[in-house]
Image (cartoon, rainbow, N blue to C red; front, side, top):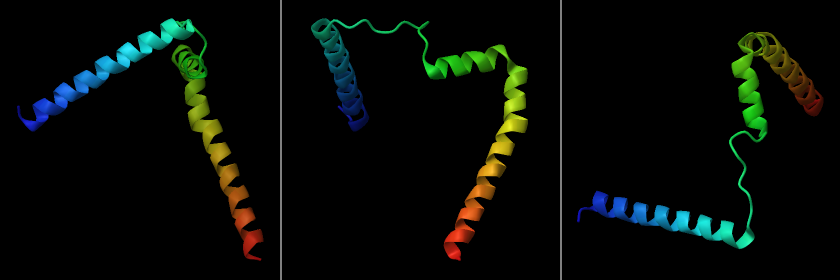
Length: 84
């Protein structure tokens, strides 16, 4: 076997072992894995962005630059005080 083939075989073996370990852990601790419809913060944000693209544009073009400029001003003031 060549080196890339050996790596592929090792990778596949590790993936299979990880899958087996996950299944074993599920059986041992009997947890219910969350479904795709559960509320994760990232999912909520992504859904809101997809459903209201106009709001996303406003946030990205108006609110975000304002927040960044305020942070930069605050940071500059802090540095000036530190240098004084």
